[in-house]
Image 1 (cartoon, rainbow, N blue to C red):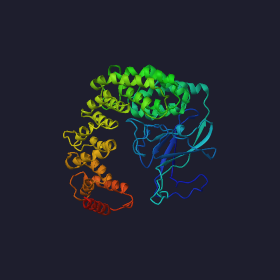
Image 2: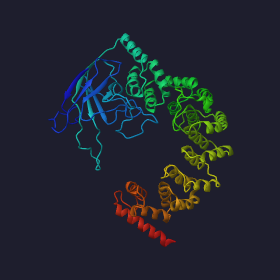
Image 3: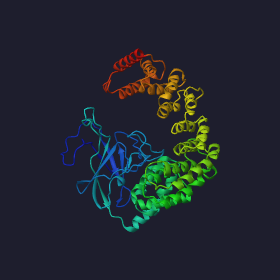
Length: 514
């Protein structure tokens, strides 16, 4: 490994002259792992920098390097980085935050994923830490970004024998811990694309229990020919059944045929039974963990009830799957974990309304976990008048383990969406007597949107009277909510006093109209 220490430069375009180094910007040292061969991984390291513990991967996307930037030149010409391929479940969390599993190597980034460095020759790389964000007036931030000088390295052409030896050595000894799988092994293996051995390895890790590992594997598959990927995924589904990540991946990629759909569905149906869905490790997963049963329900729901146009229409197969889910439902509710029951509720709510599906949702809604929360929401997707009072009773029923009623607070919106004005008297009662503050807030917001005075009065009380301890932390959010929903009445930067004055005037106006 060759290391180079540099003073930091101000960020410049490739054609600009290099100015004098500002003295208040710290320097840092970077290095490129040596030797560097074409078609093999290239890692750039921070040896000593202005901030430590830069932990890749930042999200479950192989090309996502967080708030860092690597620039590369080849023979003096600035190269364009490859586009970052993002999946449907990969970009959760803050932009600059790292989701790397424990044990993932720190202070290094994979250059080979960001640039196609397949040609032998002389390259240079520069690392910038931090991203510029626009100011309120739309101009770029003037805050200086620490970055290294250009580090020169040579890429040597790999012989077929060297390349084969590297792939065999890498695949012969994969790490067992999630940190090195996500932060080293999988991104290094991507340099082997489109080798079919790499493809099958990435499909294998779609079954990882760690969402970062499975997500990195799914992201890496975007770099392989789609026809090969779909074939490998279909084979895995037939042989091993579904996984959470595999369900997402299989559903958000077009190209499936009716024959693929039939094979995958019939391979998935047995995993609706909890007894057939034991995890390979044999460990009992926690209630919220994905299982083969939850993945099976999710995949079947995605195939038939998510309008993503990935799968061909097949009404007969859909009817068959609906029947299989209804038959398996009692066993799922009795033996599967909460995650699987929650997935079941979503499936039952997505399918065409039927007395049996309605009955099962009512049973799930009587539970005291997140599956019950989902079932109540699903009942509002096919509203029946006799359900309204039953569902609304949840808003004021005591006994939730969460004293703030966070999960129940999603129900007021769903009730109004399903039942319209008929739900408003129940929300007024919730504002007045619910033991859960977030239920009261959510109910009041819906009442405000429907011009009910009790809603305005409740919001005003929260801003003026400080009746509950969490109020102070919530006040800015509440102020923003009022601004966002009354833009014709309030300027975007309305002060707290102006917002409370607006609420007072609206309460007075509505009182006079009675």
